[in-house]
Image (tube, rainbow, N blue to C red; front, side, top):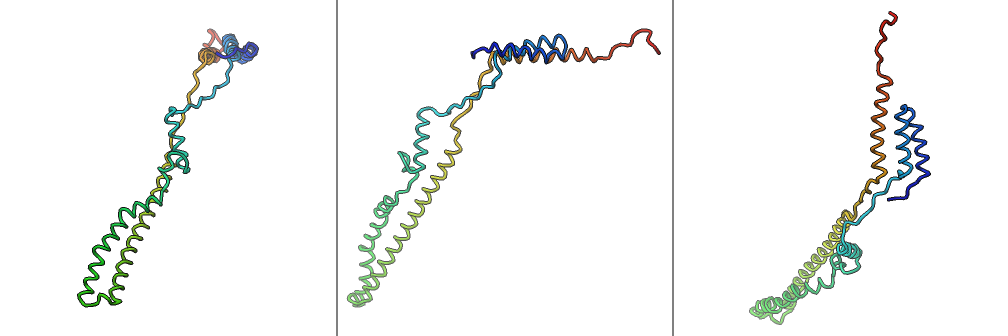
Length: 216
């Protein structure tokens, strides 16, 4: 419980009595009591307390995720694109098998066609092999370029989605302060005072019955 303000209580009682006197004797008494309690307990509104909605583990992951979005920390790999690793993977999965197929199937096939016409030593054979090799390389280059583009684009989209999710995540809530004893008592007195004031005005301004034998 907060420190009681006795000086404020005395001042509040005087102010409350002055205001309450407008409603007659009842209003004076209610105003004095309410004003005194208001000054005694204080009427400063407490601010809502800001609390995190994340536990310790969640907060740590949240912070690491924020660092990862900036290209740092343990989660950086979730959003970054490793072009060198992508090229290595492409070479192992697509390029080397294509080169092997070219050497084992395409070259013998072209050479056999020219050997049948006794043109195996002609410049036509060399041109045909060169063209076939160029076609294979261009096809591989196009596939690699497309894969790198898609990988980079996916990385950008992951980062955009991660940023949006981070910004839209509710990480805190406000805890409303509990009503103090003074606030509760003062609220009750205000209700009493309101009823007393209503009764006073009803009695004061209610139509009075005409006196018997009055002047016509």
